[in-house]
Length: 158
Image (cartoon, rainbow, N blue to C red; front, side, top):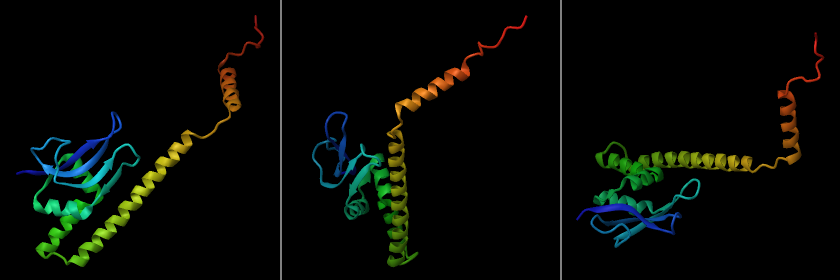
């Protein structure tokens, strides 16, 4: 039995919302599943992802194969990096405490980047909605028209 980590679609038409589930590979997309490990909402900016990191790591260690989208989500949330670090601990390259320190450093940097991107997006949205008086727009248009028009008042020389 091939176990997959995949998305299960919910939500209405053109308003997707997904559960991240572990399911038998032969089960239908929105059908029976073994365990729900998180949610994914692509409509928010940035996309909202709720994931039980420990359950996802356990299923990966058991051999569950994530789909491409779920693999990107797991990578984004750091589950694949944590699996990589724990493999290094198992091989004896470093101890468990060093692995957790590395993961915490990565996690704080990652959260800072997410916050920065979210703030940039909010600032762009605010700039789009900034209030510009209509009178100023009309005056600017009139100035452009006057500057572009040829000089008609110039005396004709004969």
